[in-house]
Length: 636
Image 1: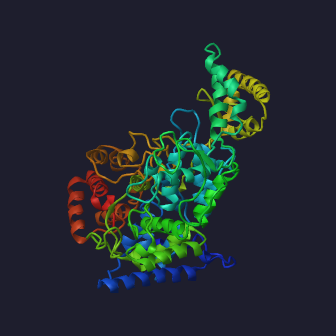
Image 2: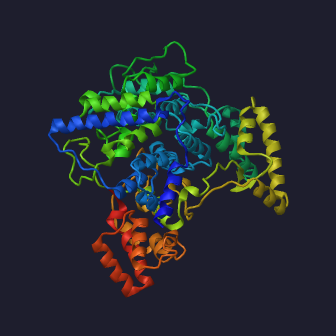
């Protein structure tokens, strides 16, 4: 048995192959990754000496295994993965495990959750039939393909064009906030530069240095966010809205063009000019005065006051990623440090602190430079952190000795996020969730919530055709033809529709699907496990919560855990007991599957008593107790 799992581990951990020796990039060189991890550890060691702290002990294999899985792929290991790692004898197995995890689909899924929370990605939009589906897919693809963070940022901020075109779907970053450009700008500064400017929308920031005039000069870069060519449809749209007689099927067809084509596009590139609000209250300008774009810090970038500019958003993107000194690189480096180590080098991570003012300037400077040297490769950066001895340090239950930052003296205990808990429960219920197909982009045309023209035309094709129209007359002609096609589609035989739909089937999951959180509706419905355990509603940046409540306890006692695990004999969890004949080994397997470690002698004694007294019900009680334990719900 042990030899089987040893061979399985070797196959599993090496199945992704080695790193390419042909690429010159430093992140492709294992020696560079190890050297960088060592340099980080040396910085931490210097901190210990300066603070006269003992070097913490490293954790055991089981704790490292569970920690590495939850941090990098957002779930606990399957029973098979856990047994394979724990029973293999290999001095390099920590490095091999990290390599295995960061090349897995699970890493992309977990990063997708992170990006969705940071960018407030939702499936739909309030008050409109427009969708964020193509934007959601773009973000997902960027995380899956490990798009460098500077490129990712530039694509978002400089975006314009067709919201359904995969090459320009990043425009959803702006159209998601249609009508709220100032809020969007505040979020941009917070997410990418760790600068909180929301107060300056209304008044000079009393707690910082940002003035209201500064904020509007920055807002000028992105001003002029208008849909592509929507003015050509405006007269027709007004007619259909006002005509109650025709506001039936024709109106619904027109709504597809108005909301889902024009409403998901954005023209221009940022005018570089904006009018101050009518309630502007300071002496440096007049209410309603037109001002031009100018950056408030970093290398100055400004746009001429004499004429409008065609590429203000591109100039803003370039300034953020390349002309703000070390701010852009250190903000994302600190975000990744918190993601892996549990707490930022400085906190909060969305309030930038110059390295020189942080608790450990040399480390923060090094991390920012490392991010640049890695070409903003977030996967490689996290791999380096996972390879450090610092990541292996045993849990420290005591609060940090440094105010507003990490003391690096062992990981702080924290409750798992709602997504980590859900994905771990799914792992116990159905096995490796990363073997499930991922949700795909649904670009079918929907009218009155019914797909039409299936197999004949998609939203991507429709959007391209509509946005190419150059006049009101062209729009009217196209609309008449399109409305007729939709009418014929509704009237066609249901058997034909069914056949075409099967040929063009898209993959989506409802709230009841036992799949990764990244595949479920976003945000989670209020009755869903994810919402109950604090998942973000994705209305504001980083809005998830890990605070406990009574509803969570009741859900674990009476909800998914009992229904899909404890009382479900077909749950994957119980498959680990197949062929096992002794109570001791069954209990050991359950512990490894749920807590990813074998039981202690005392725990084994308790559980044996329960199994002997209750029989099969005893094993269900053991599962229930372990899943609802603090050890399962917390990360050490």
